[in-house]
Length: 174
Length: 174
Image 1 (cartoon, rainbow over the protein chains, first blue to last red):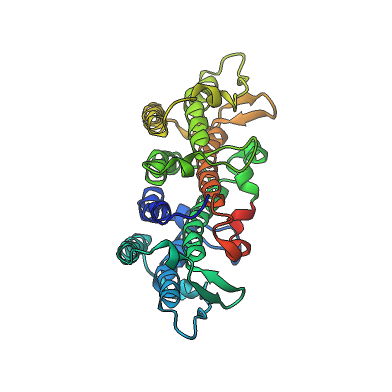
Image 2: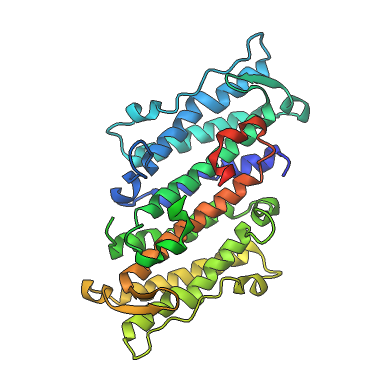
């Protein structure tokens, strides 16, 4: 599918609601279980999505749009949320994520990005030149990938409880 | 995590809302794209979940609870939904799924299953004896696996649009 701004925003704007429908009010066993050492729980993933709203997507988008002499992005800290969110509740994280996402999408919509501007470029610290359109498509795919991760991690909490069905549930082996 | 009836139902009751938050109102490009020949789109997955409500989970649960002489389950038809739902809208499927799930969980709650009854067994046509508890845990993990599938399939629609980020998005390679 070609990237289309409205079609992409349609996914981005749904994510807070999806996460709340999935996680809000669940017992901690579901929201803090992970896939083993150095893997993330649903709580951690929501924290990572918050970091993205604060320091990644819109920051990089502005670097591209400003077209200054240095359009190199700062590397994104994938572990900042671990220390930042210690002791916080998932309810607080979900509310923060919703608020940040609404603010960011409000700003994105107000930019009225034209097809020409979607082709402007910035420089990724690892793989070089990327377009604004690729950045926005990545934001969307990144959301979807992390919803998939959250549900996979949750499913794995029942790996033993499902007994012999384990072999028939591919999600338990990913 | 050990299976706990209330904790399991907490996930099952959220699924209709999660699917509606994720899919309702999206353009068809998102909901009918799949992963290639003989793979399922989000539309197909919702159809498969409906089949489960109609012919799988509660039917097998009753076979176990009745403890009749033949407790062998009928094989589940994984492709029934393809012909059944041709020409229908995703909106109709989401509404049907919600209604069936609510009805099934209402019946499940009314059964007041005790820990002892959760250990009653039936016979799976392929791998033999399974407990009621394993069946219910599988229902939960199956939901979660299919939400993961839907979001993975959606993410893959942007495989090309993300450009060089493709290598950094594991969901595009599962």
